Length: 74
Ligand SMILES: [Zn+2]
Image (tube, rainbow, N blue to C red; front, side, top):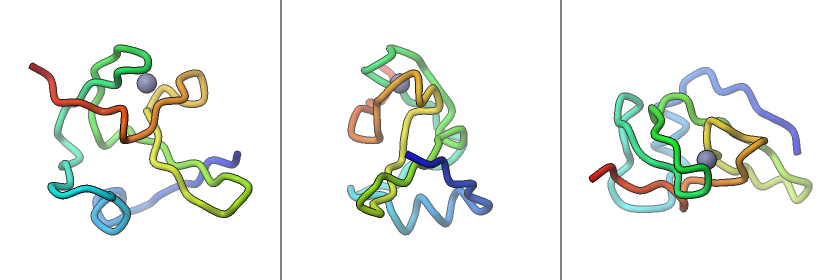
């Protein structure tokens, strides 16, 4: 896995977020893998061997959570 450096993180998220309702970079969400609350703009992107780019938890690679593991803070 290779980390990609994203210059325009909002644009990247808008284009690659697979669900309805793309979060804003200033939103705060919780990663259910590492139980941390993070700011969306701190997300990381990793490219896996197949060429697929994964939007990951800011605590990657220590945390293997991706955006499907992000939940809203109650
Ligand atoms: Zn995490």
